[in-house]
Length: 310
Ligand code: SF4
Ligand code: SF4
Image (cartoon, rainbow, N blue to C red; front, side, top):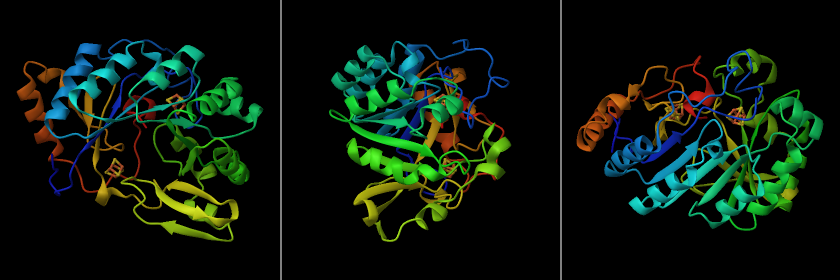
């Protein structure tokens, strides 16, 4: 499927739940999200319907996000369904607060990879940042999963919280056979409140290294990868603010309530539930809506990351 600027849209990011057991300071604070219910959440059959329609439209890559996707007990059915349909590149983004049974099921699943958020290696800071004393559980998940699956660590750069840990995070990833990606803080939802104080750019990070080299086209990804000679490591950077990478955008998003958004920064979407009558009609409506995808994102948005799927 192509949008109105001939960009091939082949990547669906599907937020399958708004629920989360964490309260990360840049995503979900208790004042904007006091309750944690599944009210309005798509049923498993609805999720299947949407994935089928997107598959018909040529989607090749699926990422399940949230909220915390593993809070849905049918997440493995969704993975199996998509894989059996022919989508073989399926990934999940999780906070990594996973018990051993879930880790085992991930290992046995047909997931291609798992992205785990890890912003700090300091237990106390971790608790303050996420609202959960979960550092050891998450580290255990990273260490176990990285022996069986491709694991990427996502660290949102925050000036007063983890900018001084960049080197330690790189070494931690290296020791655990994972690739780390540093993500620029985006002015989205509650992150707008801390954006000015906490924003750090990729360039600010690169200045800390003596020798580094850009790796071209390592993979079709929004991340730019660099070989950092100082640590003999490959590190990813997602320049979500300093380089919008919109001109090569290949993705759209569906929220846990079934709203299709053409961009992370869009506040208006298409309610897919209104077109569930037939799969052909649903696919056609999606196609028409994607044609309206804007070339560039808006400057900021009040949408909440946990609703639209970061
Ligand atoms: S960033 Fe992820 S883990 Fe943290 S509150 Fe948001 S959805 Fe939950
Ligand atoms: S900001 Fe929007 S248009 Fe730009 S890359 Fe991200 S999702 Fe695509």
